[in-house]
Length: 235
Image (cartoon, rainbow, N blue to C red; front, side, top):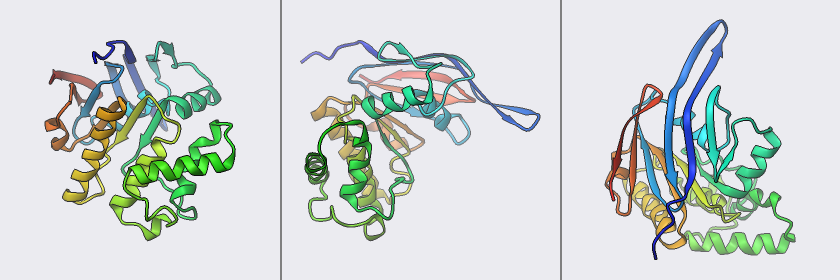
């Protein structure tokens, strides 16, 4: 099956400047990148290169100071927060380094949270959450709260939550950053499996060099000082 080369994310000359009192701090300085539908891409760079800010702009979590961000052909650069929230809920599944789970909720309840955008009945949401948790290897742990789970298990819950609304894009920010080497490898393989089997557009924002050696990787964007320094096409 030949994948479409339709751009799903198109970032054009984006600047992001934060105001710290009277001082302007530029985090992005003319960032431009294009990611096609169904691609597996990695955005790499050292600490302070602007990786997290780039992820926030690509993922509709923040708006650029200048420039444009197109998501599936729509310019999101000037959308209201309510419209951005709707797009995030429908099109993008996030996986964060710190998991961002709610400790008072069990795994099932954490996974059903993003389904607020869906009008399904609660039993259908719970059934879907159970199915996804089983798929990521947590069939026996789905009633446990985050504090009762290992770091790797918490990240699996976070991945299951990212899949709750069957998004087109999975956007992961340092997904192995808080895990040991073996658990990090398992999470890497799980994310890759979702890309290969579910045809998800997979974007990893990381400084972990292991991601640059993964199978099926198509593009590596090297970020430095808030802009793309180099683009390597792997396949």
